Length: 415
Image (tube, rainbow, N blue to C red; front, side, top):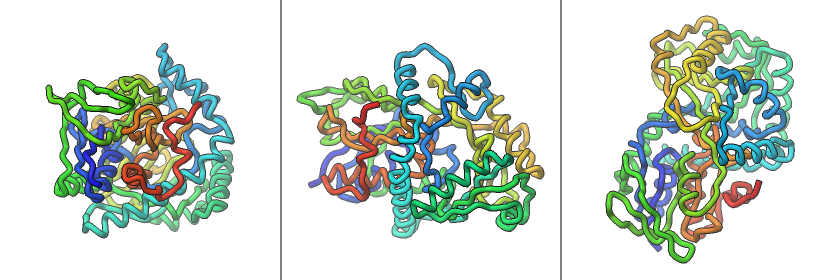
């Protein structure tokens, strides 16, 4: 049965949800407070990475974060502030930084990431979409033996869980990237990881869903939610009252504020990340993460993107130049022949990634509101899990068995 569905949030999660819902015959509208043309969906590293099996909340993160807390150029920076929601999230995050959280998360992360890869390849092929999609794998480049040992343990875990990965020595790194100098003593290599050019992919998907009848209301915010009998009865937009059968909340970090208006507490914090683009000379071909500085290098269509940092702070549009420079300097350290100009550094972009306390997304129905589905909290893996999330959202709407088990993603879980 066809339903009228409102998706709140027009990033990659909202767009992928719209794709599958409209494909299943539903009348879909997306509303976005901005223009559906900026934010984390556009400036991310473009990875589709089942190899990223360790959630952000893992053993040792808090201790390392405390060391970095007063260095605003560090890879992981938490802005100290007196805010009730932040303090509550921080306590839950600290509790989640455990080996139990890691072991409970590996299989769900792999399952939704592999599902997303398969679905994206199907979407591209079935609809003859032209966006860039590459399957070159991903190197985790290390400069220290300590980092190499940690990556070796991750590779072992990945292989135990069915992923194709191995360790590389200097010579094997050179064989993968023969045309560029890399200063690294070794690397983990995940054959299973793929990458895209985000702007191309999201624009192709956005254009496609519009052709299929999805309505997009941009630069507009919902002013009121009318609740009756544990349901959203209607919303107010542009002085109009609009009614829908189902409401999908996929507005990234802003989803927690929406939930608060609806009487639901959803623990989320914004994790700001930066990216810098440089015109490509095609020498660099394989995506890589620089393990110690936690930066990502992605060869995209016509340019190379350098991205990184996790800045958990208040929502603001400030670009910290020292953080941008830290990314660029790290790249130049690992790739001595690459030079990132001041102009490119000054043109850095940023986006907010929605971080749940355990680093695992929220996907599922709200326990408080019958016609509300939550899809957010993907941290750094929103791009990697986007199509899978969209497919799952459509299956929940249609009361179908989901493609994978989603118990771990329950948005009503307690911390």
